[in-house]
Image (cartoon, rainbow, N blue to C red; front, side, top):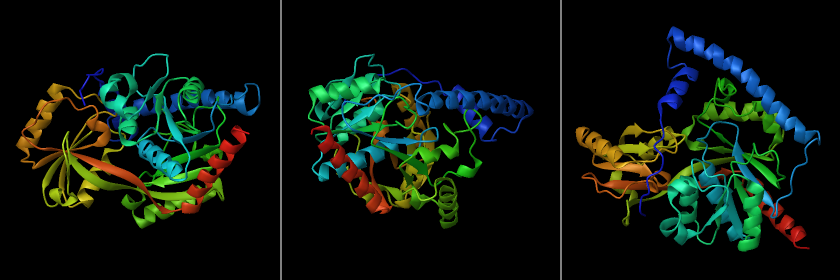
Length: 382
């Protein structure tokens, strides 16, 4: 894929914020900043509650989309695996004979107000990743026969899909906080490796909404369950039972399904076993990616960039220099990062790690989502 350089993301503010809210920065000035952020969280909470109340009270009416929609969202600031979960659900719907589409806001994309619909060939030859966002390009490349649409106003995007595609149901990526539109179901993802008891509301922490708002979900999918200790997973399940009572809980993993050379053929998973790998990523949960490589037997060191970072030729020179200095056998990156990788060869081989969501437990709950979609489609076209 040709690279079209997008805006270079400044990592200074996100890094300062992360160091402050995590407690990594123990300085006196950071302590003062945490107090200010905690106060700001109160204002954020008031705005969130007020906005939600407008819809729950009926003062504002929720819109009905042109196609039935299933939301996949989360309570935290990224890193739970929404893109992988959306791809999994799209495949599951296809397997059931349902024609899905995926709708995204297009994080850091610049396609303008007009909705953009991608399909596999357009993801590689048409729209630029800087216009549609990395997640949309990845999904369009990965999913055969699934339109991927991007736009800020999700109702307009879905209306465009209804007019210009054969989609029967829409998967709304990151839709939990999109209060204005009705959905068939809200699936909320929670990362098993994150201690939810210690999370605070933004901007003092990583929570977009209070934990009590999990009651708004129809199902909870725990991601990266294989990377959490048994005690960690047990504590999380106990917390979820306290908050949501009998809400269905699905346990999932992000399973590595293959490796491939960047712009080249697949290679065996054993290729990186007992080899030194420099893991390069710009995703919400780089630890999970790095742990996946360790589970394959690789010796891993990491070079991390801010989430959704657009790679430049200069970045590649720095990555190559780091790989040489550390005597790395391979540079490994995620499929989402690969769509933004400039067309430039490195002296060190670059391996792209492909993964898919797999269900550990809760298959019945997933089947219920599919059945609900089939029923809604029947009612929609009656």
